[in-house]
Image 1 (cartoon, rainbow, N blue to C red):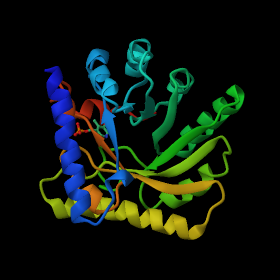
Image 2 (tube, protein in one colour):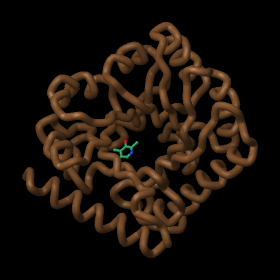
Image 3 (cartoon, rainbow, N blue to C red):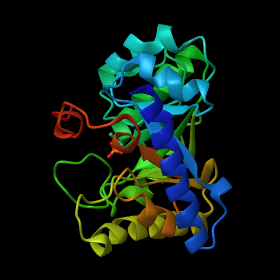
Image 4 (tube, rainbow, N blue to C red):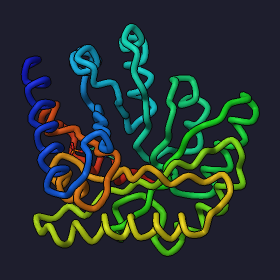
Amino acid sequence: MNEDILRNITIIQERINKACKENGRNPDEVKLLLATKTVPAERIKIALKAGHTLIAENKVQELKEKYEALQEIPHTNHFIGHLQTNKIKDLLKYNVSCIQSLDRLDLAEKLHQRLQFENKTMEVLIQVNTSFEESKFGANPDNAIELVKQVAQLETLKIKGLMTIGLFSAETEKVRKCFRLLKDIQQQIIALNIPNVEMQELSMGMSSDLETAIAEGATIIRVGTAIFGQRIYPDSYYWNEHKD
Ligand SMILES: *Cc1c(COP(=O)(O)O)cnc(C)c1O
């Protein structure tokens, strides 16, 4: 089981390298983030010990449960799940350096208030719902630029780029459309030169579509299943919660 994790990471790295080569990209431009939802701390540690130290949870509760156990190995925590405003205070206890799932102004404002109070800053990515699916969180692509402009005025929040979950489809070209849309929005934002906004990160691509995402410019790919195996809970458990 445990050797599987490292073997699986090697396979992912080979997929990254191949996709980069085919698209004239440098593999150093693509960071591998481990999506660790439902994975016990003991299994996450195997990856951390081998030097794969960029990890992310979807729920504050899981972040909290694994926090103690993971402390002994230095690592970087991102947050990639739907964040309810009443969990902000808790999330800030667990050393998260980037929230990739910032998707609405009221969340940004409440986060800003709390960060100000704690005298902290936070890196964020703006999550965009490029597949237009009801079940997925993320700002509507038509509103994403406006949201970036508004979040840019909250000085504790440091925008570093955009995040999306592509359409779940076996049809590559439909998935590609989502990633292209994210890249297109990124380019529009860059052209606007908004103060306090950096746009270097495009977090897109998961176990099944990372090649397409890399072809379209991903700088962070988020991989769970292909490394840790199938999860017991359906993803709808994470993506389809009631909105607050
Ligand atoms: C679970 C999850 C992933 C990883 O998905 P896999 O298909 O398991 O690789 C990536 N991004 C987000 C936001 C997730 O919730």
